Image 1 (tube, helix red, strand yellow):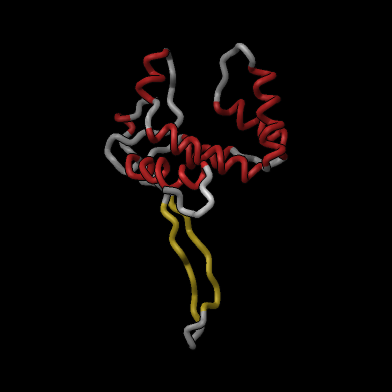
Image 2 (tube, one colour; image 1 turned 90 degrees about the vertical axis):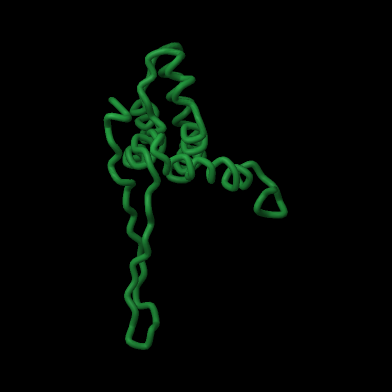
Length: 152
């Protein structure tokens, strides 16, 4: 059941798949979305709820960050340049940066190349009368995981 009276794919995605990926991303079996893929067996081992749902959430964030038109322009150029060849995540991020003028690489490191969930904490100060004088947020990356579980 979607979260609004107007069902759409992203609402259903957020309520179902993304919530399940958050749960999986906090288990000892968590792993980054990006993985070394040497053969087809690696694809099957590495494609799960974290890869699918967290990866989709990152794509949605990249679209919002660079803009829809620039995102699709970057994808067209990426596929044109990389057709029938091997590629890396950095190739896609560079194509998005060239199309938009915005650097998406730090988002990749935070969301795709690290396991675990990030934490957002509010930071605020209050006047003596209790009125909020300033408000902000601090983002903290997930604690560093045991690299033996996720070899490079």
